[in-house]
Amino acid sequence: MTYDQNNVFARILRGELPAQKFFEDERTIAILDAMPQSEGHSLVIPKCAAQNIFELDAEFAGAVIRTGQQIARTVRDVFQADGITLMQFNGAEAGQTVFHFHLHVIPRYVGRPLRSHGRGFADPEVLAEQAARLRAALDGR
Image (cartoon, rainbow, N blue to C red):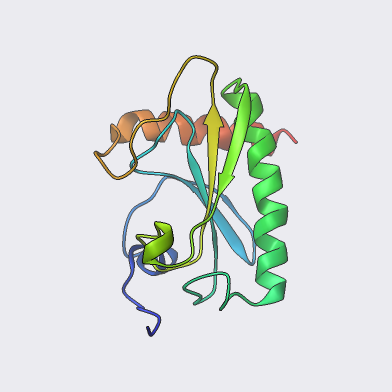
């Protein structure tokens, strides 16, 4: 399969689609998942054309992990999560639905099961408020 330059994350990276972005550096961005499984569900996306882990350059892989760690800490603190799940899928058979490498950062809460992914969009105003909280927390670090 060839990398699709029009996948949703490539279009977000080019500024063609809106997203609740709350972090950016030269190699990565972090956004809130538009169809979250949990309050604060975030995505770390590299700024390169790679469908999966097998195509991801080592420098970008390292950048995703560094950003992912920072975002996981921030999400845990801002949303007072009991735990954090990091997930990443490679190929349709593994559950990948957007074929641009990305890392899920999903807050987990005692007694609250995850919602199904891809089953409905979150309220944009709620996502905007959550992104503002995350930006403020990151600015304070």
